[in-house]
Amino acid sequence: MAESEVSAAVPRNGKISEEGLLLDHLRRIERSRSGCCAVHFHLSNLQASYRKSNFVRIAARVFDNLINSNDVTLYVLSNSDMALICRNVRVEDIDTAVFKLRSLFAEDPLISDEYGETEDRFASWYDLAESTDYASFEEAVLDLEASIQQRRGPKAVNRANLAPLSSTALIQIERRLRSLRLGEFIRHQPAVDVRPGAGRQIMFFEHYVSMADLARKIAPDVDLFSNPWLFHFITDFLDRRVLAVVGRMNFDKLDDPLSLNLHIGTILSPEFQLFIDQIKPHGEKLIIEVQMIDVIADMGAYDYARKWLADQGCRLLIDGLSPLTLQFFDPGIIEPDFIKISWSADLIRDVDMAQMDELRDIVGYLGADKIVLARVEAEEAVKWGLELGIHRFQGYFVDKLVDAMAAKGLI
Image (cartoon, rainbow, N blue to C red; front, top):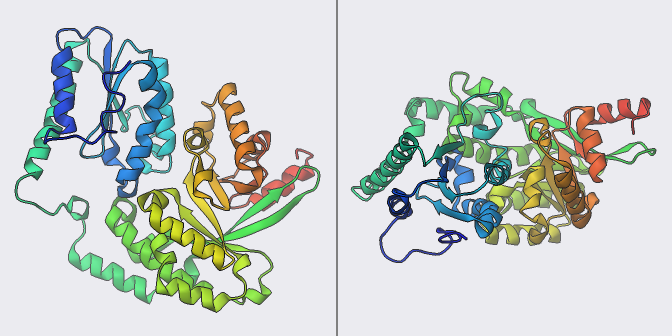
């Protein structure tokens, strides 16, 4: 058993930090390091939205089984990083938990951009029995502890991510956003309901802003996606602009439901209430998508928004999940109408038969009618979903893809 099941799960009394506790642990095992290893997870390099405290706490639960069955201690550090210290634990068992953690953050560029790279930017492994690895890990923890001491000094505003941007550039971006003809950048992506032998039906069309095209227009020399603060500002601003554009549509003539992916803050805003007033009594034609990380950031606001949307006749979809996330998080407890999980060939290749059986059971438990498999651009994804019992799919050309598969007798 572990020395402590999850060191960060219980509030610490006194002023000792998690980094200090981790250093103490290292010092205690220094003379008896045989069979010991450490894994440092660089969650601090994730986008800011993934570093919310509630989300990090959920991420820590990934290691529950590993901790309860082995001599393993987990430390959640002050910068949102995590560190495991393990003694006499099979690497395969650690890898299983690490794989689940990666799946939870699969949408973040730190994870999604690293496939094919030789260097692991998300997790650093140390064989503590080796003196060089022990010294390297100890140095890394000492650096983290030193950074805490510095932060306890005069408070400084951290704007490192904004360094490449001048105030003039930011003003220009905002000005361009306000004068933009946003309708030119709004795209429509279908989601279809597929029944083998019965063809397909449109479930909804998601209306979204093409961020890549928008970035080329308003800031061709700036990487908008690498700056979490700027990206959140832009998407929050765009939410309200999209509402204005969609609110002018004639919902009386709308054949299929449409979906909008919005911040919870936008749903609770006066602009959204005005939008709902504009489209009444057609709330049943509107599906609102919310990112899972937005839900976790403020469960109270989410619950209020969910109930309010239901009162307006709208349906709610939770986005931002991966297939393997469902193995350790039950989205049913937050009571959405639908959940969307993202297909990824790289992740799915590592799913064994036992995990497939578990996913099939989860789909049955949640209800196949509630699940949409997104990012479906290939026959492989449709076949994989159907094998699990999923029959709702979304992708750029998923309607044409499904029609072609039906014509070939594949579904």
